[in-house]
Image (cartoon, rainbow, N blue to C red):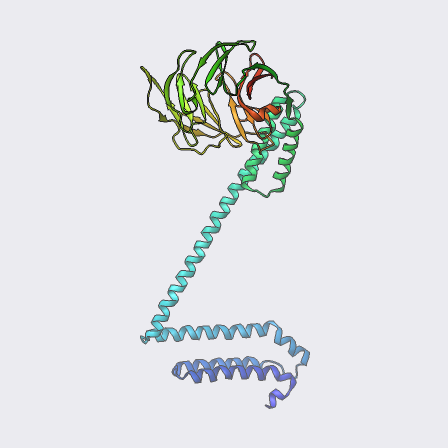
Amino acid sequence: TEISADSAQSEIGVAIICVKGEEGKEDEEGGEGMEDEKTEQASSEENQAVLREVPQGVPGNLTGNLKTGSAGRIAKAGVSITLIFKAVWGEIKRLRRGDIRATLRLKRNIVIVAFLVLLVLSFSAFMTIRSQRDREKLAQFNDHMKNASAKFVEGDAILELNRDRARNALAEAGDEVKAALALIPGNTDAKLLADKISQKLKDTENVSTVDFQTFAGIGEPLVGLSNTPKGLVVFSADKMYQLDGDGKIGDKAEVGNNVGAGVFSFGLEKPKDVADGGSAFDISVFLGNIYLLDPGQIAKYVPVEGGYAKSVDYLNNPEQFSKNSHFVIDGLVWVTNGKSINKYMRGAKEDFSISGLLDSNGEFGEIYTTADSDNLYVVDVSNSALLVIKKDGVYQKAYQSGEFAKSSAVIVDESAGKMYVVAGSKVLAGAL
């Protein structure tokens, strides 16, 4: 057109074409009535009136600025709002006329909007709960780290004054930092503190080498050792021997060649049959009751007049013990199981973990304690060592000797400062 030929009026020409395009589109839709046509005509006249206010002869660079300026954006927004309003108003009119398709579209839109609102609310609730949990986890992590740091400083400060107490503090610090890492596994500060604690425990570890001497030689393979008020009693496959304080053999009793398949009660007199040993691989006696350790259970035999009652299961729930498992009873029941120790009270398993022990690749076997002792003495078969672990789980020290790897029984006499180990056909004695 003559107007659009002028470079300064190109904005007007484009705008007029856009408005007419909307009118043509409305004509093709065919049919909204006189009211829609009046609305469209009024809109077109308003747009043309606005455009006529643009001064004639505006330079080309200023026209370019107008295209990208705020006036252009406002004009486009106004057209968009007008189109949206017209679409909504048209839909309302169709609903008023009872248009079935419009009704279905309304229901569909209501469902979509409801779903979106529900989705937004659900996501908001999820993020709120997650944020709360993260805050709680972070608070717990900070508490564990604070305790671990305090215990580490305490242990390091008293290391030269009281080594045992210092190691206890360091072990507690290790437990705290483990709890912190369980909450946030990849935390750099926690891992760094854990490394410092481990190094300090390693530097202060108390390890002694044991020089064993032969206490008694029996001349046949031995399978067990027991401590009685009269002294040590040692067992072979079919005999038992009483040893005095110097290791000399005193009384002897014949057990019979079927001891591997049965359990017998005796002093040094003729044995009495108590029960079929079955698959049991360890035995312990406490307050007159006999306990047998099976691969998945502990059988308990209670004495009655003329013998023992039928066995009952001691454990509330079955377990899976390793082939090297052994147990001891001091009121509580302690069972070695792989590289851990299980603790039971009245048949129920209680929490027990070892702290301060750096080498976690051991295989525990024989275990010994008494009701009067504060310590558990555990044979680490894999590392040929006897570990001293307090009954609260704190590792104290280790005795090393190749004899521990082939021991079949161990007894510790804390009052005499001695330990006794059965190895092959000998009973060996060493100093604590």
